[in-house]
Length: 445
Image 1 (cartoon, one colour):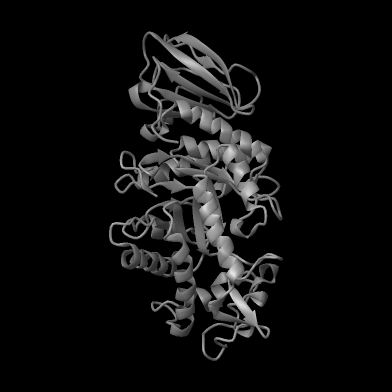
Image 2 (image 1 turned 45 degrees about the vertical axis):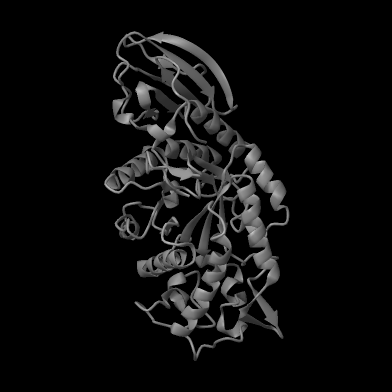
C-alpha cells in the first residue's frame, strides 16, 4: 500500500487506486473461528477494508505467549495465536481486502473487562520481570491508560529498558508476519491519550525495521490514532505536523460528531494537509445503539466519502453496539458506494460544496470531478441548482442512485437554465451523477 501518485489523498495498491470500504463484527478479527465465512460476506458486499487489533482481552481469545506452570513466558510464542494471525493475513490478501492493524490497544492495558489483571504483560502473570525490575505495577487506575507505565517505557520517558526489550520482541514478531504482505496499513495505537512520543518511537521503529529487513525502497504506511474527538486538538496536531513520520491520518474519532460539523471538520483537516497531502482514514464509523443511531452511522459514512476521505469502515456492533459492523444496512451502504464510485471517478475529484446553490444549513454534498462531472449526496430528499458549478448552459444528464436500496433509479436529461434538480422520491437517501456526456470510468476500485 502506498499513497496514490496522482492524488495522495487516496490509496494505491498493486498499481491501481483503491477506495477502502468495509465493516466487520469484531476488532481483533484474526481471533474469530469463522474467519473465511466472515471475509466472504464482507467481500460479497463490496468491502475491501478491515480493522485488526493485536488484542486478546475478550473471553476465549488466544494469548500471544505460552503459559507454563501458571505463568506466561514473554519469549515463548503461543503457536495458535500466530497461526491465526498468519492465516488472517493470507485470507485477506487472497480476497484483496486491505488490513489496518493496531499494534497496541490501550483497552488491553486497563482494568476494562479485567484486561490488565489477566494480561501476560502484568508482572504478576509472567516469569520475565516483576514490579522491582520494571516500572510496571500489578494494579492500575480505573480505565486510565496513562496510569500504566507500559506506555512510558521508551528512552524519552521512563527509559524502562527491560520492558522495552520485550515490547520490541512482540512488535518484531508482528512484523515477521506482516512484512510478507503488501496489503497492510499500520496504526500504532487505538484512541490513545499517552505521550505522542510513544507513537513516534514505534512508527520510527517499524520503518527502521522495514529498511533493515525489506530494503530502503519498501513503503510501510504508518499512523497513530489519538482519542480527542476534536480533529484540531493538540493530540492530532502531533500526527498531522509530522509527515516525515506518519504517512496517513486516522480521523475516526471525528465520527462522534454529526451533521455539517462532522463534514466541515474533515474538510478543514483536508485543507490543513494540502502541502503534504496524505490519505485520511476512518477505521471506525460509529453509530448504532451507542454514539449515535444507525442513521447517524450511514450519514457519517457518506459524508466522509464526500469530504475526500480515503477509507470508511463501520465499527463493531458487539458489546454496547458501537457500530453497524457488516449487517444488512452496512452491506447496502457499501454496495451503493461501489455503484456510485464505479461510475464516478472519485480519485480525480475534490469536495466542492462551496459551489452549491442551497440553503445555508441544508445538507447536500458535492464532489466535482474531471470534465465537470459531479457526484451529489442527499441524506434526505432535496433539490439543488446546477448552474453555479461549471455546467451553466445546455443540458446535463442526471443519473439517480437509490442509496437505501442499492439500486439505480431514474436517468433524466435536464436543462441548465437555473431550474433545480430534485430527488426522485420524498423519502430516503439519494446519490446522483451529473455529466454532459459519459464520464471516464475510474481506473481502480
